[in-house]
Image (cartoon, protein in one colour):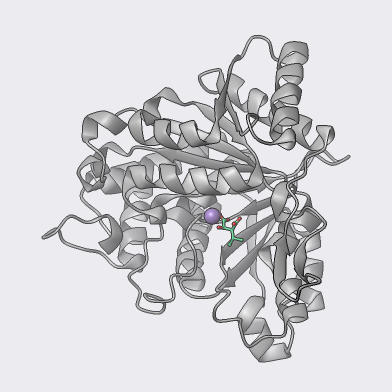
Length: 366
Ligand code: IPM
Ligand code: MN
């Protein structure tokens, strides 16, 4: 049995996660996949019910699970929770504890959404890229960090952008191996012109390439240029490997291709353990969207496409993952739209009805 810990979180997290679970239930019932989803108390809801954002039982279930399906957290809603408690349930802590260093963020131009994109259809046609964002090091975690008071009484904020050779090499290996399953092309993104950690990034990626992956095409690109090229010619990219902060920024840039972050899934994976299994955290890239929470209008496709990544990377069912992605494509092609991806005047579906359209397409695929 594949045990999936479900952490709905805040805002629209529960609404969209419910729909991803409904889709996974379909695969269990109709395709015989041995998936068991367990909803866990976590974050703000756990704080309200039990006075902690991460109950011990939740953490134990996370540790035991084969994968996590995560919704969203709302840091503003948690402002009243003491900092120490907030950190316990924090996403960054979970990423670090599970050591899920390889963050896959696939982005493609869905043909059915070409008109909803802020870009010209010919600019984005054929775009199909995946970020491999390093997720457990870099400036997000580097020390020293903090806000200190200087001798003159004014404050200074400090963070440290740091990468070890091992941290770079493992994410580079992941990216090259992934490229071999795709179009065999890696773009490594850094600021080697300014930062020492960026220079080491470039050197180590080149070393791993020469020693183990010389068959894969590799180019190095500066992060500012990458931001430009993502808007100018996104179809030129296959796999983009980059650090934690650049990966955060650039994946949002590329998210504009579809006109909405609501379409984007992600998977965060660890190295395989002794039993061969990877820890995995699946989540839509979008946040908790408190302005539309509870209204049943959020786009569930980012969460549903995250479930497709789960089928591919945790359930070992790539053909079923393809089936789900094709069902999303079919639903979009048939005109299913949530508000974030609709053109003015187009009929709009709610969260649940969008999922119904995907499930109808899944049924039609049998
Ligand atoms: C993301 C988010 C997170 C990040 C935040 C919520 C900490 O923006 O997953 O892209 O910066 O990594
Ligand atoms: Mn982000």
